[in-house]
Image (tube, rainbow, N blue to C red):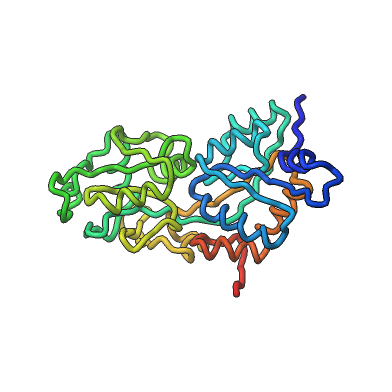
Length: 289
């Protein structure tokens, strides 16, 4: 059975055991939804422990999980749970994935600022995004969108290695429905919001933390006649928003040394205040300065 030295350990060894300035480097990769807060955690932790550097990259949840399985990163960020096939691949590689829920996110639906729609249901989102869905024009929903002369709905989505892509399909479209062809599939969460901001005909989905004043976010109802709930930190915490999700970090086995200390700090009040400041919901009640 293969065994990997943690990447952080390899970084220390490369510095030389007798060097007083040796510095552990924790490699952290994955979800673009978590990218902003992961970078903020890394920056804040450098003041907590100057002997540890955290190198953060995105690329999508699937990319991070694959890197963790292959032993090239210490921590994988993911906005979806690991698939059973990924867990089996990890175990075949001598890796037992350990999951940490580090926060919660309201997955918002984004519209251009001039779009008059204020409410959407799961059924309407299925009809817009789902394969064979009948809604292809804004007039199908009874609205006229200023600046959208074609009336055609421009679907903005994520690439299929994204945890956000997977979660939206599972939570909104359901297991028996695939995405409609012809969407504009973006590399990152911010890219989705930027495109919607500049495209009157567009609709997209992305993490709440990427919201700007130049887009609108309709409230979402789980079904026709149900309460329509706005995407906020509070509704992600209490679970009332119908597209709220946990955000995870995975390590290859129980974390040790510098990686364990870092994960402990992320789940502490100090670390949870960072995620709250970045527009996500903390995993525990947290009082922040």
